[in-house]
Every structure is written in C-alpha cells, then in structure tokens.
Amino acid sequence: MKKYSVIRPLSVSEKKRVDLRVKSLVIRLKRMRTEIEMQGDVKDLIERSGFGSDRYLYDVYSKTYAPVKVSDTVYKGRGECDMTSIFLEYSAGFDDFLSDINKEYDRLIRSSSAAVSLYSNIISLPNTYAKVLLLTFYYEAPVDSILQLLFISRSSYYRYKNEAITLLAYKELGIKYKEIDVR
Image (tube, rainbow, N blue to C red; front, side, top):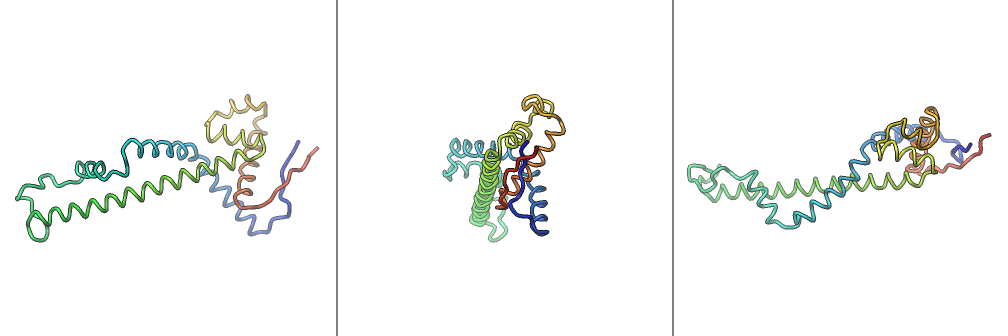
C-alpha cells in the first residue's frame, strides 16, 4: 500500500493554511462540475447572441427597462420635463446595464476558469485519488457505485477521498510531498 507524506514537517502556520485550503477545496469541489459546464454555456450564449453586438443588447435592454411610454408627453423626465431628459436617463441606464453585464461575464469566466484549473489539478493526482475525486464530485456517482467501480471498501473510499483533498491542498499551496511505501 502506498501513502503520501510531506517532504519536510509542516509548521503550525502551514498546517493552518492546509486546513483552511482543505475546507475551501470541499466547497470548490462541490461546485466544480456546474462551473465547468457554465463555461460552455457562457461561450455558446456569446457565440449565439453576438455579445459584442450593441444592437442585440440594446433590444434586450429596451424590452426590459424602457419607460412604458417613452414617446408620450404625459411621462415627464426629472429635469426639464421634456423628451431629452427622458432619453438621457434611459441612455445612462443602458451604460450601467452594459457595465453590469460585463462584470457578470468576467465573474463567470473567472469562476469557470478556476474550476477547470481545479479539474486539472485533480487529474494530476495519483490514479486512485484522482478517480475518487472525479467520481465523487464531477460525475456525482453514488458512493456504492464508486466502491464497486474501484473495488475498494467504504472505509478506504473515505480515506482516499480525505487524502486526495489534502494532496490537492498541498499541490495548490506548493507544499511538496512524496510517496512512501507502507507495509
């Protein structure tokens, strides 16, 4: 049986960093599949909608946020009570709308890129550890199915899962570990 251990003993502060990283990794692992798939959805949406096209966004904004009757003189703007002030407010709102879309787009790309990076780190782990994490968090397979697929006991599954998350934390923190043979 093979196990993995750090090359040099960890200091108290390094142990705390590893513990914090392990906790954050569990959360990130649970969201990994959704965020990776979201990257494909965002990319498809951009290609289909022509995200760079202001005309498409203008139509969406107009249908959602335009005053009910922008050409009706009964509707008065805040300032001069004329159509110019109404359209100025409307135009400023469109700029804010574009800014919000760009911020959300950037957030989605960052989160999905982080999920892809996490996936890459997982597949670089030793074989059984990588399989346990992928089957558990990416493919969302039931524990009993994973036990049958990998021919391991329930206690081994949980040991592999916990060790894999710890190895992943080491990898992200740049802590070197080595394989040791336990007999």
